[in-house]
Length: 492
Ligand SMILES: NC(=O)C1=CN([C@@H]2O[C@H](COP(=O)(O)OP(=O)(O)OC[C@H]3O[C@@H](n4cnc5c(N)ncnc54)[C@H](OP(=O)(O)O)[C@@H]3O)[C@@H](O)[C@H]2O)C=CC1
Ligand SMILES: O=C1O[C@H](COP(=O)(O)O)[C@@H](O)[C@H](O)[C@H]1O
Image 1: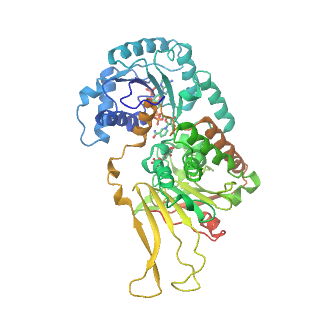
Image 2 (image 1 turned 180 degrees about the vertical axis):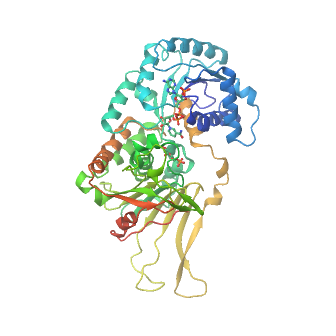
Image 3 (image 1 turned 180 degrees about the horizontal axis):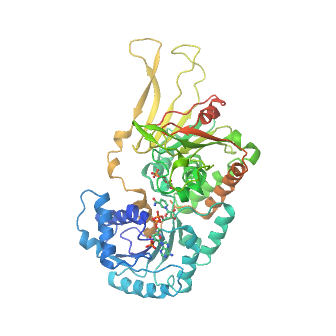
């Protein structure tokens, strides 16, 4: 059941001394309190191996808030809700002590026995932690208990299945919240509203009127200090299998009969089931993989991927992937969904472009050529908003037209204050709303689609194209669209 107001809970963060907790989780909890989404009835227990005291932990929390939020206030009061419990999560006996602490905090903060276990740690620990939580009785509380799991959820389908079995032995599916932080982004959540709350778009949202849909998520950053993780992941597993496929599912799904968790998920699952499988031999026709070489951006010289720390000098890991997806159902037959994502590209941008089909006949503007197509552009980040490209009469010239952009970005007035993805997702989890988390069916279908692609790449069935840092990816990606008579639309 979804709690409407001021959910109460103890939140146990496994990995509370790590990067994710400091950069995302503590500021998110702070915002929830400041925005009065949660009241005083909460406590946070941090788990890590470092032998910190409560004071040291609270200092670290304070630091994280001051770094990320300009005007922070009431920090002492806020951090007094934070407690640190150091232990190695592979040591089963420590869970009993943790349980005692949770029971005590439950009574101090009147959290009604509700517990969130947030696993902000490397995935190899997920199964062990889930098992010990159940075995030592931490999930047997008078309130609810929920498990939040960070990505990556497995490395391929078999490893994801093993992980799922391990956590399902301790938690039911409806207690498991698999985070995909893109689903917490304001404009990703807006996809459904744009589609289903506007009489203008939904009738056109099909293969009769749409020529193709493009989803881009480009990053300026390189692999930073995550070389070890990224070498085993690459862009296909890091971004495509989860964030990109989730956006495709939201764009392509049928209208759900209700906006409930189960109904929305069930429609997304149908899209993933309808994705046309790409066999190993066809991979090069549908996918391009690339790796950033050295290059320049904003007059700065940038090193190539293989020169990064903890990266093999001969690495074949892709830092860029572009794909052409086909969805074999009545609505989308024949409409390509072009997807691209990569690191060290020219701009940080996540953007969706819906390109409508050409009008049947050109009465205007350079007859014999096509009038520019109508485009609906959904800007997810860094700017939030939508633009609609239409054609209007050219000033003065009778019989001539020009494209104009109807820019609705200014309507998103509270854009800068929209809650951060993690804040929304944490709040959803506290309220028991799993709509914006990924269900096991979605995860397994995504891996089923992705595995043949990575297998083909592993067997060397497709070349790894180099692209200069600071560019928009390899030329092979442009050629993939050109072969269909299409082109990537520029990102904002
Ligand atoms: N950082 C990010 O931006 C993102 C991270 N993620 C995911 O979140 C998870 C955490 O990432 P991140 O915070 O970057 O990782 P870090 O390496 O920064 O942190 C790892 C944490 O795990 C703790 N830890 C490791 N081993 C043990 C152990 N045996 N017992 C108890 N605690 C242990 C560490 O504590 P200590 O050192 O004190 O032992 C530390 O708090 C990963 O699954 C990652 O893929 C997902 C998206 C983005
Ligand atoms: O999950 C991940 O996402 C980030 C990009 O997230 P964004 O919100 O900044 O678009 C990416 O850098 C990282 O490699 C990946 O693990």
